[in-house]
Amino acid sequence: MITEFTVPDETHSPILVWFRKDLRLDDNGALLSAVATGLPMVCVYVREPEHEAVGPLGAAQCWWLHHAIQALDKALQAHGNRLVFKTGKARDVLLALADETGAKAVYLNRLYERDEIDAEILKALHEDGLEVKRFKGQLLHDPHTMRTGSGGPYRVYTPFWKALEADGEPREPADAPETLPAPARFPSSEDLADWQLLPTRPNWAKEFETLWTPGETGALEKLEQFIERPIHSYKADRDFPGLTGSTSHLSAHLAFGEISPARIWHATRGLHSSDHVIHFRKELVWREFCHHLLAAFPKLRTDNWNDRFDAFPWTENDKAFEAWTKGMTGYPIVDAGMRELWRHGYMHNRVRMITASFLIKDLMIDWRRGEAWFRDTLVDADVASNAANWQWVAGSGADASPFFRVFNPILQGEKFDADGDYIKRFVPELSRLPKKYIHRPFEAPVEVLQKAGVTLGKTYPKPVVNHFEARDRALSAYAEVTGKSAQADPRD
Ligand code: FAD
Image (cartoon, rainbow, N blue to C red; front, side, top):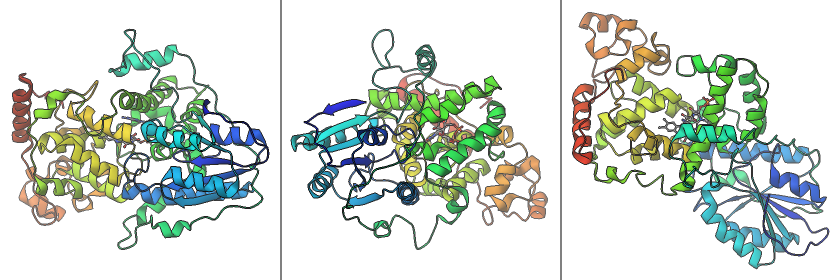
C-alpha cells in the first residue's frame, strides 16, 4: 500500500472506493483495506470520457466495460453494497461525492499507465482535505523499481524474466471480503444504460455474447478451466490457432482487472507439467515487461522506441488498409485473423504477429495505424501490451523482432494451421479447398477452384500485394533508413 496523503481520521464517515481497471472483489487492495477500517463504503465507477485509462476506450472494450461493471455492481449488491455510476472529471465527481456523503477518504488501486493523470487528481483531492490511499495489484512487480545492474530499465526480455525469478515468488493473493459495509444512504447514481456502451445498429457484438463472460466470475471460471487441462500442454499447443482453448483467454479479464495476476500465478503453484507451466508464467511476465517498457518510455504508443524508424517511408495506402481491416487481403491466414478480430474482439497471438507483420512489412503501413485498429477492436486492448507488441513486430521497439523477419503468410499458415482448420472457421468461402491450396488459393488450378466453389476476385479476393515483391520493397526501405542491408530469413 502506498499512503499518498493522510489527514486526521474521522469515524463513521464513509470511504469512497474508486474502481477503475480493477473490477473485482478478490485480491483488491483498495477494497480490502477499506473493509478493514470497518467504515461504510461508497463504491464508485467514474466514466471519464476524456481519458478512460489512457485515451478513450475502443468500441469492443465499451461493450466489455458495460458488462463488467454491471457484473461488479451485482457482486457488490450480493454483499449488501452497490456500485455508483458517475460521468465527468474524476476529481470533480469524487469531490462532489465526498460532499454529498461526508466521505473523508478515497481508496483506489494504482494503474501505472495513468500515473501522470492520477497525480493531478489525487493532489486535488488531498488539497480538498481528503485522505487518499493507493494500493498495488495490477502487476506482479512494480515496473518502476525493476532495474538492470547499471541502474536503467530492462530492454531485453530474458534478463528481465531472470531478475523476476531471482526476486522470488510474487506475494499470495488475498481473498475477497465477506461483507462490504454500506452507507446509510447511497448517493444518486446514473443509469448504466444511458451510457450507451453497447452497439445497436448494427449489433456487431452478437458473437461476443456467446464467447465472453465479462466480470470476475467469468474470469475465475476461465482460470479454472485453463488450469484443469489446457495448461498441461500449453507450450506445445499455444501456437496453433486451429486448436480452440489451448490458451487461457484471460487477457481481457486482466485488462479490466477482473482477476489479478497474483491470483493467476498462485493458481499455477504446485502444478505438474512444469515446462508448460513455466512457459505460461513467462507469458504473464511478457505483460509485466510491456508495462516495464511503458513506464520507461511513456510515449511507447505514439513514438518509435528506436528513433531510426522515424524516417521510415510508410505508405498511406488506404485501400490496402481497409482490405486488411476487413480480412480481404487475399492471404487466408491474414484474413482469418482479421475476421476473428472483428467477430470475436480477439485474435490468436500467433495470428496477431502474422497480421501485424503483413500490415507493417507487406503493406508498409505505419504500425501506429494497426495499433489503433487493434485498440478499437480488441476486447483485451491494453496500452502497454498493444504498443509494445506492435513495436516488437515493427522492429522499432525494445528487444524487437529484427525488421528482416518478414513473416511469409503462406508458410506461416501452413506451419501453424496445417489442416486449415482456422481458415475454415473464419474464411468459410475457402472451406472446400484442398489442404494443399487452402493457404495459397491464388496458386490453385482453375478446376480446383471451380470444384471448391471459389472464384478469385469474386467470392474471395486476389492478393492485394505479391508477398515476395512486397518483402523486397520493405527490406530496401529498411536498408535505406538504417544503412544496413537485410536478407529475409527464408524460414519465416
Ligand atoms: P495466454 O497465451 O493464455 O497468455 C496468458 C496471458 O499472458 C495473457 O492473457 C496476457 O495477459 C499475457 N500475454 C501473453 N502473451 C503476451 C504478449 N506477447 N505480450 C504481453 N502479454 C502477453 N495482449 C493484450 O493483453 N492486449 C493487447 O492489446 C495486445 N495486443 C497485441 C498486439 C500484437 C500485434 C501482438 C502480436 C500481441 C498483442 N497482445 C496483446 C499479446 C497477446 O497476443 C495476447 O495477450 C494473447 O493472445 C491473449 O490471449 P490469452 O489470454 O489466451 O493468452
